[in-house]
Amino acid sequence: MLTLIGKYALPDGLPELRRIVAERHRLETGVATDPDRHVMITAGNMQGLNALFHVLIDPGDEIIMTDPGFASHTQQIRLCGGKPIHWKMHEEEGWSLDLDGLSELITVHTKAIVLVSPSNPTGKIFTETELRRLGEIAQDHDLFILLDDPYRHFTYENSEKYFNLASVSELVDRVAYLFTFSKAHAMSGWRLGYMIMPESLKRQVLKVHDATIICTPRISQVAGLAALTEQSDHLLEFEQILAERRELICERLDRVPHVFTYVKPEGAYYVFPKIVAEHDDSYKFALDLLESARVSVTPGSAFGPTGEHHVRMAYCVPKDMIDKAFDRIEKRFPV
Ligand SMILES: Cc1ncc(COP(=O)(O)O)c(C=O)c1O
Image (cartoon, rainbow, N blue to C red; front, side):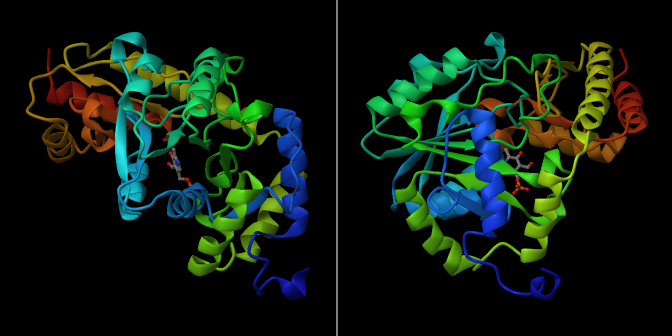
């Protein structure tokens, strides 16, 4: 293995890693997959999605994404000549899926729905009932479902709620499931992930992958092998640390109801408060917070039109940083 470490790997990844991934996917979902026909090692979910969008999108095609939803999906869809269609989520319903609203958005140009649960930016975990219904709608309209799943290990007391739509056997021909090592294994710099998808899709995705990056760096794949095979209880530790930070950020948000209201996040490590303090828009608000209080938040408008008048806060930072940031917010917005 060591003499090969600096060499190209097969375009779809190291066979031993794909084998382990297929087995892991079977254990997690009950769905058997073939490492050669269905599994592809990626340089992270962004790269995997980029290859998928290249395959699925012809100019003018539409991809439905939650609104608010992950900002980079919008950019990727546009880069591939597609049109992101914003599927509005309702804050007053805890950011859950609006399934009645979904059917109305589907047109002859719709190719796929992209989904993140637990969500970035809201932390929402969609229910099994909601997801199964979404699957039926996708089936009725012959759409692909792209499950971008970085945060499945960060579900706190809501772990029972997490449901993987890739476990529904009737949907395997239309689901692409993407897992990344970036978050659960703290390996964002290694650029490593995997995709499980229908064979027909893999054949096409391989061409894009080959034309863009040839293969995922072998050294990262070897690290991925270690990550999936070595015994480790780091996930429990990560989750415990993040759970404490989530409690802290919620406590601190509770102390500034004149600045923000919020829905408590169920998973991931984001909270998406609504700005109730006087402001023009989320961009100007975020800039003001940065300049006047040296606190960095992401303007909610980056996550879609429904994100306007919100900000995204990431609590993947130490507790004293959260405390300091909120001390400054309280100073900037005295009662
Ligand atoms: C929803 C979502 N998808 C993808 C990514 C990026 O994943 P990767 O590092 O595997 O490209 C992120 C990172 O924040 C994310 O939140």
